Image (tube, rainbow, N blue to C red; front, side):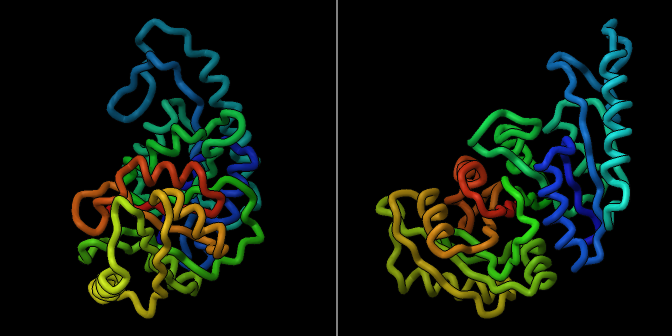
Length: 277
């Protein structure tokens, strides 16, 4: 892993993102980029490089002043912080600007704080996080509170395990190796999507074999819905990091449509790693 992106507004959520990104960067020798965005008006238009158009007759002086102030704040915030390779400030629509930066700058992991479904609306709210996790081509690590003292010992990979297949889980393997954590598989058994325990364990074993994952611990948890099962299992066990796939197309991940992944991101307090499949 070479590049980790932190999108933020330099509030405590950005600090939280930096703390956990640094844990990963220190282990993988990655560099951290920080992206700050001055929110553009909804009717603003942009050129093919993502810059706001200045020929629309609108007065952009206030936005440009905000941009200058943001650049100065970001430079000050980053001073003395380890592994920050640069800061970028721009005017844009928040989620679109983040996704564009990911695509154009070889980003391999995004770490971002989000308010989830709780509390007041902030710069990076649950709606922004939902769109980014849904459309990002790289894994996104979201968190809601201070995790500076978090010791990650276990990573929980959640799936339905209906059809074991080989998928791209490079990010999970990178974190497993970098942080030397134990891997756990979770299947939430519901009345609507019930499988016998023996069938689930066979599929888990096959998935581990196909994806070269050594010695995962298997868990089967019964609950009313998949979302409730993930949330309750995480609370019961104290698992430190939860991984769940998005961009579903086929057997292994067909259960986890974007709404389930987004609900988990919004309602669970552990850091969540969403990854495209």
